Image 1 (cartoon, one colour):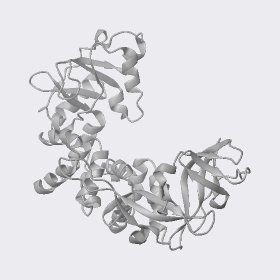
Image 2 (tube, one colour; image 1 turned 90 degrees about the vertical axis):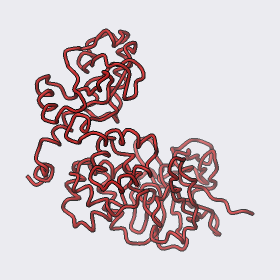
Image 3 (tube, one colour; image 1 turned 120 degrees about the horizontal axis):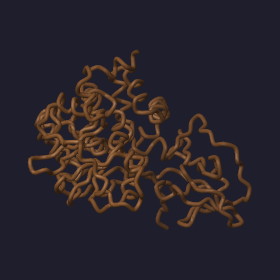
Image 4 (tube, helix red, strand yellow; image 1 turned 120 degrees about the vertical axis):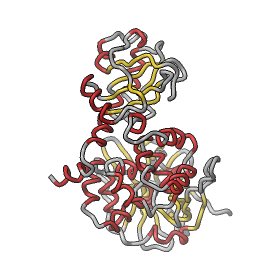
Length: 403
């Protein structure tokens, strides 16, 4: 009979079902014991109301598409704690690097003993082909990823600690480490967390941290960064290295970054983000507030929406004006946003200097300004944090962390 393999990505969020058919909770991770060849599965971390608990693999009767079924009805509701010599397959191993590629999944299979499971395979992210979709993951035997299951947990523990910090705290912690250790931890961080970290560092610090990453890995991280921050980092590399990285990025993610790189970095065009909140004049106040509430929207960009004629992706149709968050709160939800435009904020041309932008932000007492081209189309928005990054001393982050 062919070997049965269940992947961690399929297990996550499967219901845990008691022996009498009742739903107990849902699976959130798989606990592996180090040292085995192959590594053995100790059990599952399961979310139940108000806590996470451990379910030993010996209590599990079946793992199927409909859920994980228990052999016994009772469940120990003591809060889960990872023990010495254990690892979480999803929380600690996914996102790590093996043979220069990112681990995207891990497969487990029934062991020879009854009611036992062991690690079987590792799925590595397929390499990107310029202009095409990423290839399907490469599946390798667990033994070909031996370093992934090594007993040294120091890097994993440090990465787990860093990953739980606010990005500014991550940056402060990483600055205290030797460069070799910084690079080791950066390579082990997941793409989105490394992107968060880089956005809190100066360009010089960013380059030193990532210059040894492979083009494919760095392209993945750049795609997780805001377009303006990605452009700032790419601007520090040579033209050939920059072209290589842009070519490795997804074309849709690379396009706005290419546009930003065409501007002088000390101008409004070089400082702006190309993805502010943009709506057409017929959109309602309720729609605008829904966009503002997006938890992934940076605070300075959520402070106002920009109203334009279609198309609504930059460069847009004709720019009409902006509406502040405070104005949105004072209007009826059904009112068209085009009837609330605040026309007293004059947009900036893309070639305006960073000093001009800073002065205009102070004069209007706003946190973001629209940037338009010669045809009156919105190109993006410059936020106050990007201007402060430009006008403050280059080492202001490190000085603040040291104070």
